[in-house]
Image (cartoon, rainbow, N blue to C red; front, side, top):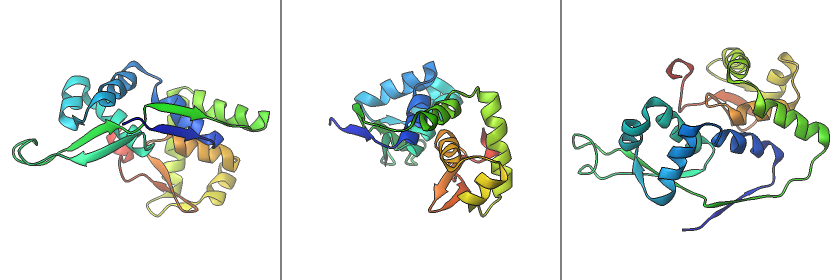
Length: 174
């Protein structure tokens, strides 16, 4: 099925730019574009990075998931299967230069520098999370920068007005 992802929020560019920033993510996405793939198939072919790519795509809502039947699973247990949700992207954004430069800055931070910021925020928000304005103020970030960081992150996400730890992937599993 052909579906188009419409991108009209400037911060949605961050995960989109990061979704295809390495060869494994590209290859995994290409695999799931044509058919449903079980997580075990991706793990076997691409290892832990392939599994993390699927988790990232799932967080960004670029994939759809379903559970396999017990017969298709491993040792009689169902497993998650993934398929690309979109076949095209339509990007229609108009924003001030200072906003887009802030977004591109977050998207292009090298992994080591980004992970340092991400882990500091992760520790600061704790188990219960914190309101985004509190986090932005504490780290002297704009709300736009904080939203961009959360959209790039695989360990941070929004729950209403709070920034929380992502349930999909705790810091220790990275």
